[in-house]
Image 1 (cartoon, rainbow over the protein chains, first blue to last red):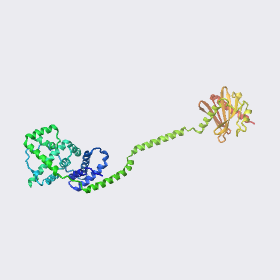
Image 2: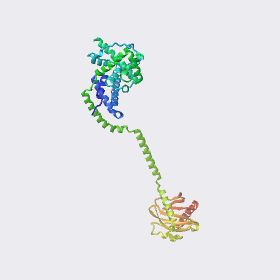
Image 3: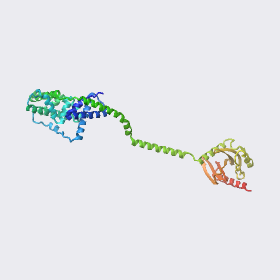
Image 4: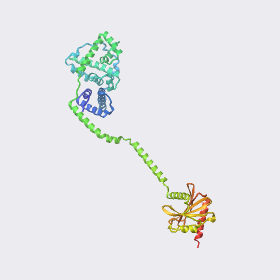
Length: 166
Length: 264
């Protein structure tokens, strides 16, 4: 029996839950749910991955809502449309060339608020289209766009700060 | 293009998700704005770095194993559950409604059949009518054709286990035509044929001890008048297309004549 897209599912679950055990439980729940609703799904391979990831994400937020109050709610998307004054003149630092870049990036990703982290993971690590991400996360494509832009800016800021300290 | 707009759009541009027109405008802006061009370069670097260094967590082998087991059990359960579910998912409300409807219909049919089954008396009347009708066919009216009651009455001897009263009412306008054997209610009976003008009267007689005397009652079957009465252990059925008053007159005279014959 093949378990398609298991790594993608686990990766998203791992980035959402930020620990292995919760991620495994989440994936299992999501796969069982997907299995039960298999009849309702008619799509190709890539659609199946997005569909499965949607279930992983929904399962995560459902369990989150059921178990504890939501604390990752944010109001960034609206702020995004105003400019935060950084302008075009961002300091040209060669932060990405450093040896500890891998650690920095992953810590930065983990430090990001959930809504930015999930779109960045889906985009950069799973290489999904804006449309697919919009379907998975359940937001308009425009919001995907602004969350990605904002998330990248936050990540860049994080990297800048943490490399500055060292 | 403003730098703020440029910043808001370069991320989507880097992902190749910006539409052609906006892409063109942004490209022009980047070509003329060194700061934005630098920021875009940074963004591309970041994208590449995240894509390259971002941890793509791979599912542990244990999870793979665990999932297979869970899905197998789910598969087994799914095979077992549907049978129960099939029952549970049936629209019981409609089924109950249907069963109730069928029961009602069945009851209605039964009742109709029950009501349409003719009663004993009705079946007898039908037999009388049929017999009367048969007797009107050519040469069927009398086995013993005689207007003499003393010829007719002895004719029945040995043919019936009773002696039917035979009276002559020719003076009253009901000449005797003759007598014949008939078979009514699974027993041989005496049938006496009388005539009134062009009308034929058939009088059926058989013994019925169990019943007491009963006054004449009239019924109408298929256009024929049927009068029935009981008297002295005998059942009488008189049938004819004659009018009712004359039939009643016949019955009265017939009874009176019997009484007179019975006098010592």
